[in-house]
Image (cartoon, rainbow, N blue to C red; front, side, top):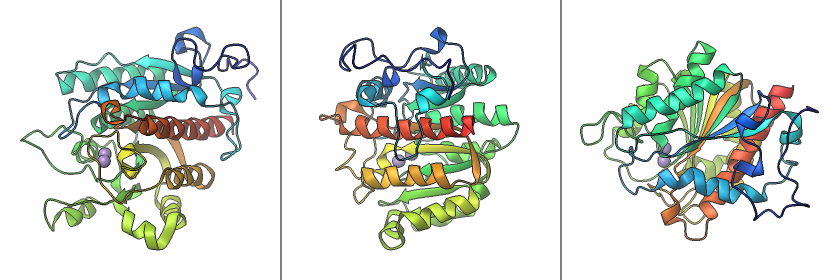
Length: 319
Ligand code: MN
Ligand code: MN
């Protein structure tokens, strides 16, 4: 327990629907003495190739996070009392220049890292994982293992001639020495592809995969065994909310049917938290597109995924 940690606004004094929105009604980074775990918005969607709108993701996830309470029974930790958790606001991204936006995100994350904070990014389209992971890898001084929960590999080479998009950034991350594919697992892959070679191209990079179809027959535990085996050392965790079935997460840029339930996603995150052999250094939850999320269920799933991740980092920092 960190006696100094400033927790969320007391919901027995100020109701959860009142007040200025921060993640889980926590204080801002500037209002507390850290370091601890910082939630950083990356409101950029200029890397999307289909439906846009993820630039509004951080605001929607904060809005959906007000019901998060202080104790996480799945992971067995009260994250906000264990370490200082705080909201770092949003990186000031240029909405029409992906390279400038990525520099702004990397610099915001890098500043937090330099102050000793662990960063949980909230997207934004999935391209924001590249600058977030780059900042984390720079902090560690080495390439990171990757746990990627996603319907897509995001390892294609280019779209429309652009090499920097939300479908190509993990190939860039390997080229830049940010991600070590041999310590990486992609879980939840599915959907139609461009050609018969796509799966082989991805595997040739070194990734191990668990498709949605394999989850049908082998279950979450098999996927977690693979995570425990491969994702060792310093690890980055990324949750593309389109790993969920569109029934659970309609508000996303590139929906694919036949996906995970929210319960399966939480089971995977819990399993990573309690069973990992790696050290989680940073993470993100991305691709929430509020214009396609009329009931707010996608943002709610993302807020709870972020809460599990924050809990994981809090337990790890305390232990
Ligand atoms: Mn995806
Ligand atoms: Mn993705």
